[in-house]
Image (cartoon, rainbow, N blue to C red):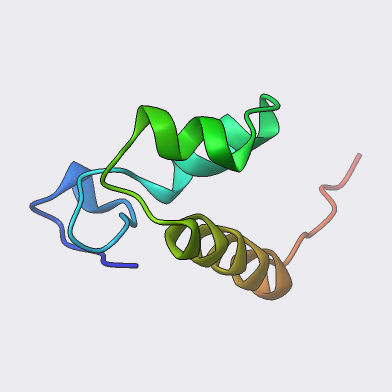
Length: 70
């Protein structure tokens, strides 16, 4: 993943593309199959989709949630 403030407002993107990790994760969440994503976004490789999942997983592992007072 690459993060560059000049590309997609600094959102993480798949290296060598302007496709955000967020887009790939959203497509998977909407039920798109890997093959559908690869067909519709020919610049992606299967490994790129896996890297997006790994990135999302890593981000969730470090996320901290604090309860708000009632």
